[in-house]
Length: 101
Image (cartoon, rainbow, N blue to C red; front, side, top):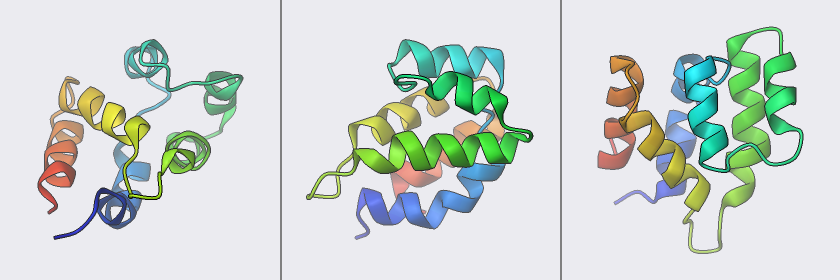
């Protein structure tokens, strides 16, 4: 069975293209969950494209949260937020990552 980190890496491209981290509602949920440390929220919002913003968020927040046992609290929080959002594509992606698809 693949680890959470394996599933993250396998889904990285989909996360970049499907996460709408610049969307005000999704961004507010990330902020409320503590997933925008320091200036990260402003940095994400300053990116020219949604894909660049998602890549910055993943590389500078989620990617830094991996433990030696391949667990990541930040990524698990992100998956929960994704699973509860209104976007069906994002919900499906979260479910697929959790299942290991």
